[in-house]
Amino acid sequence: MTTATSEDLSKRPAAAAARGLAGVLVVDDDESFRILARKLLETAGYNVTEAENVAQCRARLRSGVFDAVILDVVMPQHDGIEALRELKASFPEIKIVTVSGADSCDLYLTVSSYLGADASLSKSRIESLCALLGVILGG
Image (cartoon, rainbow, N blue to C red; front, side, top):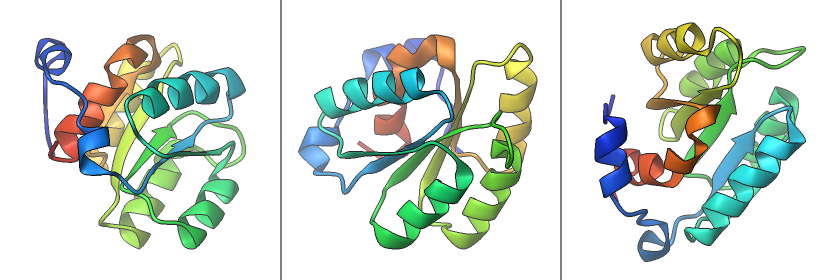
């Protein structure tokens, strides 16, 4: 797993445009977070697809090509922690960044790291998302 400090991330440029990435899937039940993530990622040159739940995520992954998934770990019906394990088993080549804005987000993000997330990020640090993707995708 790649570990980078916030300071490291703020110094690294997003390399999405140069890499010509196939895409990033943003999975979150919060529409405003998906919209914000899409704007940030598209501005950095990523091709973005959205899913509002894990069922949509699975369908999008089966029908498209993605380099990374941004996965909320606290969602109704099928939580992101359970989904993380499933996605890593089914799509081991796809990098997964877990995100959370929940009250106990540090706990959720720590657990997700132990369960195979390639990186994790508090939603309050969304401005670091593109740099973080650049790190884990090798850009």
